[in-house]
Length: 136
Image (cartoon, rainbow, N blue to C red):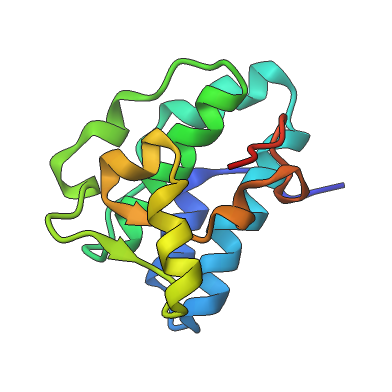
């Protein structure tokens, strides 16, 4: 049995003293997988409550991932993802590898472009637990 899914737990994880790679993996891999395991009704319920802000750029990544996953699973995108503090003024290309960084910008799904955060697009495939594969 899995622990109860909550977006607030991801905010707490962002705020915790942990490695950035662990944060990234939790948001880009664990969150979609855990969300995918939920029933459609539980998915819709999980999207409603706004997770607390951490005051970091990770808030934008969390919002982008949730918006992306909500659309993939055909849920209404929650209003809280549109809060101004969940957008970055300066784009954040997460990878420092020039080739991956270029692909991140070229193949970013709409939710990530909106929030100005650009993860590795290979982290957005079906292996991440998404309902459908996203192929650039």
